Length: 295
Image (cartoon, rainbow, N blue to C red; front, side):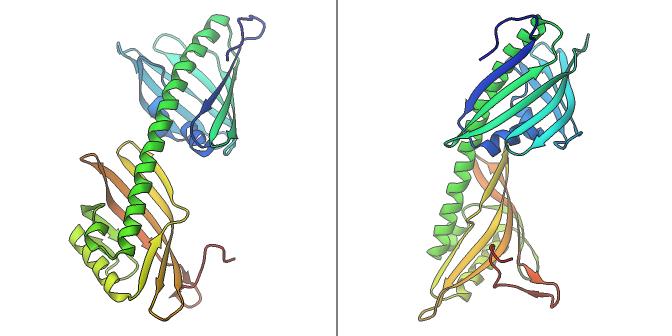
């Protein structure tokens, strides 16, 4: 929805609903790698971006037309209220001229799994420039919608990878557990030698882990977080391991896990993981009894 042409009120108002969580939409306005995916209208390609998403922090996006003409947009953040409100200045610069400094305000509202975005831009010196910008934003937001759907599809792939990984552990299926592991993986483990390099070495760590526990063995990441940028993905969360020896009550322990995946031959492969245990600074001993809700 764009306001009608009114020379006394040179503003843009656009309302769009994106089929994505509010946090993800917010990130696509505040992360440089995400802006590169959509912050240029059809017929233009982003070439570089920098973002410091803090009040007073600078941002910049460079892009070019299909014919090679170069443009840049830049400004500073006024308000950063994650995940529902964002405000920043915006100035457009071409090879021939610079436009006025405008102000953009975004309001993000959750709507049952989708996100409504209210976009408001003020400060245009002419209705012509306002209308040109409104058309450009419309194309950008169409690209953003496609990018968000693609991101969610990729995140779903990684979540399915983890779920298969967890099932393989419960079944003590070593081969299935190694399916997502890249040959050159570098893994920082809980115990010596701390750094384990290569799929064969990780396989040995997994084998020893399976043999060291009897009865039921399960692990998962209840708060799994996934961030994707192109062919790289980073996941993090608290790893929960549950074991139960025959005739004994179940035992639950928690540790921290960060993992990096790379898309290789169309499939996601784990190229690095960093797992660590919490510890008591007074005794320098690992704490296997801590839970996420402990104060």
